[in-house]
Structures are given as structure tokens and as C-alpha cells.
Amino acid sequence: MPGSNSSYTVQTVTLANKTTVTEFATPAGKVFALRWSGPALPDYGLILGASIDRFQQQVRVLRAAGRRGGPVDIRDQGLVVVSTGHAGSYQGYAYLESLVPATVDVAKLLNAME
Image 1 (cartoon, rainbow, N blue to C red):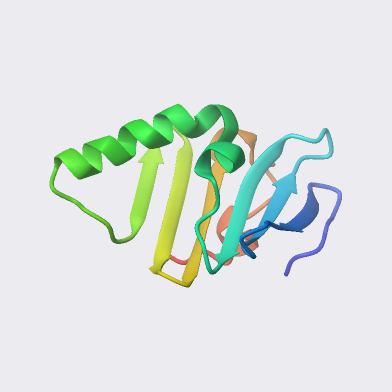
Image 2: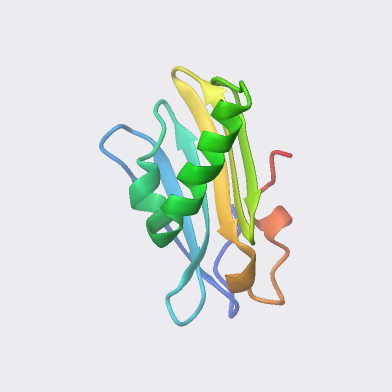
């Protein structure tokens, strides 16, 4: 896993459901990216904060188009959320393009699953 540097800090927590969430934050403490992996999906409302409404709207669009279950790949106005997996093994990442420090390669940082 990437370590902290002058452009960001890293904090990893294990949720009660045994899913690990890693947060990447600016030196000012603004979380710009997350990565998760574990046996259960994280609470999206908890990890996406103020971006949850955009995420939920895009999921509704996918579902209305007939997309049920399966991977989620949302890219909406600078919000990127990718979530994949199956029961017992989930992984994903999310980031806000506008908050990613200019010196950070977010795809490399998150070990992008794209």
C-alpha cells in the first residue's frame, strides 16, 4: 500500500463487518479518495458523505436502464465510484477529482481495478 507523503495522508480502519476502508486525505484533512475490500459492502452513506445523493441518483439511473446487481461504475461530475465483487468478497474505490492533489496519480494510488 502506498505510504503517506507530503501530498496526502493514509488512514485505514476495519469496520465491524470486517471490511477494510483506506482513506486518502490532503494535508488539510480533506478525504479525496477511498478504497475498500472485505466480506461486506461498506455503508456508502458513511463513506461517501455529502456525495451520497449523486451516487444514489446514478445508481437509480442504472437500475431504471435495467441494470440489476453486478459491478457499479459511476462517473458523475468528478465523482468516481467503482464497486465490484460478490457475496463475501467486495472491493471498490471512490474519489472526487476536484480534491485529488495535482501531484497524485489517483489510479496508481488506488491500484485501480478498471
